Length: 95
Image: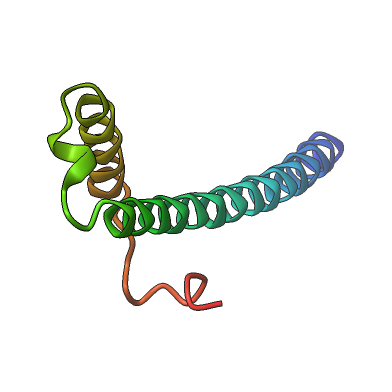
């Protein structure tokens, strides 16, 4: 009876070690994806600001052919910024 319990305890310890290692890898991947997402949002904001500087007189936006593409790019950037919400208290963002 005690051998069975010892065997089950050993298996439980091995499985728990496996789960801890898996969790560490998952958290590491989540952290790197979160950093990538924040960098992507910052890139989108920079692109949006540069497009607004380029088109400060709404010349591109009012043009028929270029305006459609320009408005589409701006709407993609706006919707991306709305989807990616970041927490102001996140210390990783302030690196």
